[in-house]
Image (cartoon, rainbow, N blue to C red; front, top):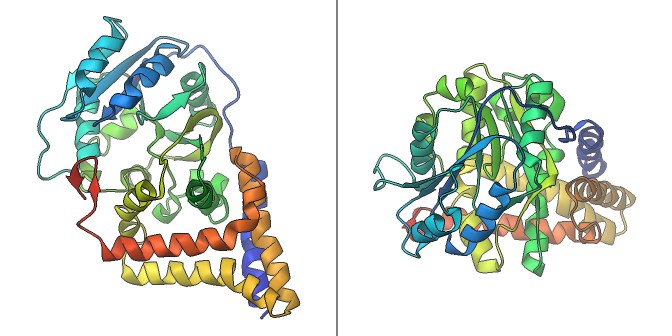
Length: 354
């Protein structure tokens, strides 16, 4: 029974070390390199105005490339309207999806080919940035002598289902990956990234042929980080909660579709997924069950695993009180993993089957 305390304790230890050591963008600098910002967009009409505003407010000499990926909701027209002839913006009408690619990576490849800057920053259309966010992220990357960094935005969660699931994004890597070690590790299993905000040297991206190496990857961010690590580049996820925020989903149906399209690709194989589910149960659900049955180690394990969520919530500017719901969050996540395998190849995302 002590195992159900020791496993959460190990996770708590990793989380505590990362809590202290994780890199957080703080400083700005006079950037010597040119910086290009790439934004793929499909059916993002509701985000166009806010996106253009957050980009236009960025400090420094940047150029923004916005690509409309065959939207049918007026995204392209709105992009032209809100950029209003601003020479910092290039609006691109994407070509039809190549059957060998998935939508996002195909859009990113077109953006990559259209740009010529020395540092490339890709962000999602629903991300909102502080005015110095890009400068701070690039400054940190150079200061740490890394080839790429992925600032993890603060995840805004308003509904109950969002509060259950969204905090697990940061929690998952904060409790399992020693981030400072991972920066220069050649182990691809330690490569962590978030495509919502990704900063990379063009030379590093050139070395893997742009996004061609991840053209089939639904989880394009993590697989891109793995390809970069394999090619000799260094980098990892950093704390972006002070410079960026996003609300990924606003309902359970969106969460189900969003995670459903990707979780069956996240663990390498069905065997890997079974192992992850067993590990989640052993570290996050079994301790509470044992505690309720009167086992002291169960309560200690429950306290340790809740402690990991508290640290994650503080660092990511999330809801600390929601940490006590962690076992329920894990039950919901296990459901989403099973759902993703059952529904693979049939989930609709932005009008395309994934």
